[in-house]
Amino acid sequence: MGYTRQELFSALRAQALDVTFDDIRLATGYSDILPEEANLETIFTRNVKLKIPLVSAAMDTVTEAPMAIVMALLGGIGVIHKAMKPQAQAAMVRRVRTYLNGLISNPTPVLDTDTIASVKDLKRRLLEEGLEPHSFPALDSNGKLIGLLTREDIYFCMNDDRLVSEVIEPTHLKAPKNTTIQEAFQEMLKYHEKALPLHDDAGMLCGMYAFSDVARIVTGKQHMHNIDEKTGQLRVAAAVGTRDFEERAELLVREGVDVLVIDTAHGDSRRVYETLAELKRQYPDVDIMVGNVSEGESARRLADAGADGIKVGQGGGSICTTRVVAGVGCPQCSALHECSCAVEGRGIGICSDGGARNSGDLTVALALGSHSVMAGRLFAGTDEAPGTVTKVDNNWVKEYRGMGSVGAMKANAEAMHDRYQQKAVPEGIESVVPYQGKMADVIAQLIGGVRAGMGYTGARTIEELHKKATFRRASSAGIAEGRPHDVIVTKQTPNYRES
Ligand code: IMP
Figure 1 (cartoon, rainbow, N blue to C red):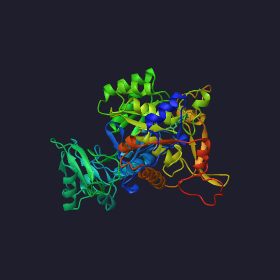
Figure 2 (figure 1 turned 60 degrees about the horizontal axis):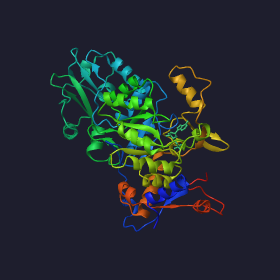
Figure 3 (figure 1 turned 30 degrees about the vertical axis):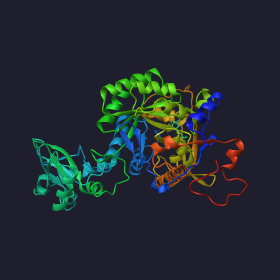
Figure 4 (figure 1 turned 180 degrees about the vertical axis):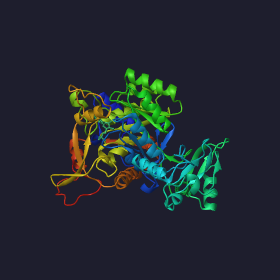
């Protein structure tokens, strides 16, 4: 039998020794579950759940809207980075939130006096913002909902000078504001309508359902999607800093962001506590994840200050030079153990951030008390990460850089119209990673590995993994033994690369 967490880490503490992923692995134990039976549901923060324990990092080469959409579709969550204007970040949150459009809370309307030409212009502008509405609610000059301008109304109109009021069908459905997603589905099904605008008691437009999205939600085809059950929309998180966060947070919250992530290199600092207090005061209903820390004391202080989630990891990221440059940080497994123990039983989500290189590392991070794992390097080479695929030394690659690298700091300063400080001290590097294709395939391998680990340890849920896991510590010969050795690799395998 392996060592319990307490046994292992007290023995290590006695030697003043901290460990990270390669140093420890899970002990196997009696199991009555198959990997596919493992339940991976977990939390990101106190009130925001995940169907798989994976989070994409708030980095400009990892998470923008396409990554956040695919993460939520696959059951995890993406944190949209903040190296852009607040308006641009909020538009990305909107793109994710409206991707499924269970309820479109602020549909773009047209006026009965608009021409079809101007509606076509509006469609083009919306497309540039990443929105693709097919139908538009139509309003009269008092702002009252009069009906729906459908894709067919626009398509079959042969004279673009005609007015909206002349082409819409007066018989199209509309419904009162409290119509549920189920009722909307039944109505649209019965009358073969593709959209259903909603009006309030005064007859003013207050939302809209789209049939394709409603049908997907109601018929359960989205069972793996991480959605906000109240609205049927995909969940999404977004990063904020500790300076000038007010406008950014306001716009993000207005677009329905599920979690605000106070994204700093040192979470246990005065400015972070001030930001947390202010965000909690202004948005008591929005969960706040705070980071990063690596000491138990820091995690406890953040918990006492009201954090709903704590991000653990300082200096372990693949592109990170914090330990080299500043001389600080703690090996990730020890940091996870200390931080998760410090806030255990308080309902706070612990997110292991940085340093995970393969699915085995994810299982170990989860077994050490974390509820989710954030990664950058594991996802940066996929189609859904920003940037294009290029060829370096005959290999297809994508760019991956630290947010504290010279390139990212310069780009950030440009985006914010600030002057880049030549004297800024980088704590990250710029690199490329192998091109990896679709996120769905990457996630399937990672999750498959975690399931396998849960099968070996006999843990049916992540909560059970926290309680049941026991560990083995490897010597350097043990670490070498645990990887392919003494052979010449002839074929790439999808879930292992020589590092
Ligand atoms: P990875 O998954 O090992 O590649 O680590 C990703 C994590 O590294 C991110 O989620 C951040 O917490 C952290 N990180 C991002 N950029 C930098 C940087 O420039 N310096 C140090 N850490 C960084």
